[in-house]
Image: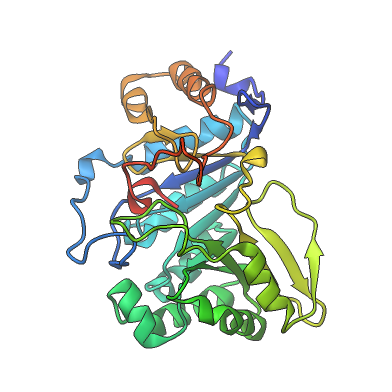
Length: 332
C-alpha cells in the first residue's frame, strides 16, 4: 500500500496536532518595506532553486492525504510576482482543502478573479497605513491606490472574507487604529491588528515599538461596541461589532503568545521546512522531493522535523534567538 494513503495525525512533542501548511512560493517582492528589506532589495534566489508547482503539489498532497491537513496558505515574498500562480491554486484546491493567500495587494486587480476561479477560498492583504505619504515611506512604493483597488477587486471576485493585516508600530502608525476599524466597517473587510515581531531586517525592532494587543482593544472599545468571538486554533483573538457584520482581530504574538495551540508548519520557496516562524533549524525537503521516487522518505522527514517542534518562540525571554532570515525569505 502507498504509505501516503495511510492517513494519521501529525502530532508534535507537546501534543499539538499539525494541520496548517504555509507555503512560500517566492522570496521576491515588488515592495521594499523599511522593516523588511533594504531599498535596493536583496539577493534573490535563482529560479532553479525554487520549488516547482509539481513539487509543491506533491508535498502538499502528502500533508493532506497522509497527515490530514485541512488548510494551505500561499505566501512570499509577494506571491503574485510568481508567474501563473492561479495554476498552483487550482492544483492545491483540487486536494480538497481550504486554500488561502497573503499578498500586498498591489497587483490584485489583475489576478483576483482568476484566483477565485481557480479555487482560492480566502485572502489576506497586508496594509500598514491608509495614509498615502506614510504608506510610501513604509513601503518605498507609491502604491496605496492600487492596493485599495485590489481590496475592491477581491471583494468583487467573491473572495470572502477579505482580511487586512496591519502591523502596528509605536510612533509610526499606531494613530491609525480607529481609521483601520472604520475602513473595515465601511468596506465589510476584517481588519487584523498584528503586534510588531522581531523578524525583520535591520535593527528596527525593540519592545518599545510594540503596540500591545490590550492597548489596541482598549482604543477600539472606547469607540465601538465589540462582542468577543470564541477562539479556536487561529492566531487572532476576534471581536464582532454589535451593529455591523465586519470583524476585527488582534494577533498578540509578543505579549500573549498563542504557541500552545499552534498547528502550523512552513515550507520556504526553496523547500526548507520550518516548524515555527522563529525556528532556528530547517529541514531540506527539496532534496527529498528531487531525490526520491516515492513518498516514504518525504513522510519520514516531515515526521522527523515535527518531532523537533518546540513549545514556543520565547520572544522577550533571555533565551530568545532571532532567526537569521527575514520574513520575505521565510514566508508570512
